[in-house]
Length: 399
Image 1 (cartoon, rainbow, N blue to C red):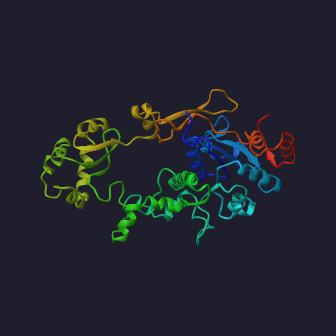
Image 2: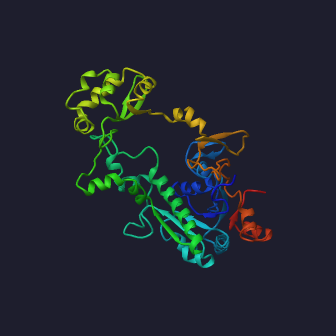
Image 3: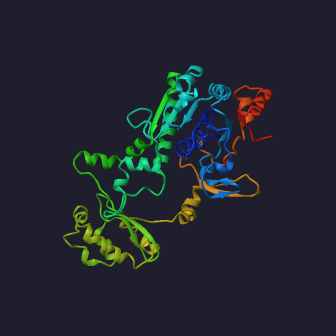
């Protein structure tokens, strides 16, 4: 089956993580994504450790299924080549500093003149305009300036970033959402448009409860692993690991099951609101009681009175029977000097009954599709591509 975005072609100038994550979403959903790489790039310089089969894993996952061409965007001949490609594409994506694409001669206005239906999506730290537009930004800056880090961590500890790069991935996700929305709107208007996504604003968008609480005078602060409004609602250590308890449906039964019958009718814990007011008293008592059984034992024992789950390590999550049954983790080959090398990556979380996303192709080599794309889409002859190669304007890997 073809994915729901089959037939959509994306000319992708993104790099690092935020932009490539967004175009990975489009690729998983069936779009043809052509990543434009700088002409001097090499596979061994594409990212951070670890490496496998001479390939960096840093970008391999987010580049799965994409095509890759190498073009010198500082050479007018390279600029003309990508403008000709843009005429045959539906979407352009980029995450350079604001103004870079205009400086290169391939900004939205230029591309829209060549292709009025083009959708031009930019993902940057602070957006394309505003006092901070020209500031550089990485994931941790988005987490910091959104307020996210101020409410993450122990109450008496340091502000903490999330363990995953949510500043990058949320920015990329909303870029992809903007592209899909603009494609839908284009079906009615026949016109493309520009999309401006900020990483900082993307994290702020997910801070909805913290923001509305602040607006009514109840600004949240760091409170560790517990919930700001409910108790018990947090992680607890068990005899062999960790688990989460997400509220209690039957307090009396819960107290009996955890071996604390004396708490069942304690006036400090009779309902959720009062329990939350006395969390500092209740939390250490529960912490000590829950260390007496294994995680599996507690999950079975408390299932009818509370919503509970194990806190998995990443290896444990990957081996969980539900995760395995739904194909949440997929295996991709890693082309390189050695045969039969594979890695595991997350599958798309979007499940559809007819046009399901398919994650089954590895990330490309740098320049792997240069000749084919320039000939088939830009309309250049074999001789013209060869001349550009000889001049160093483009670089191709394939023979």
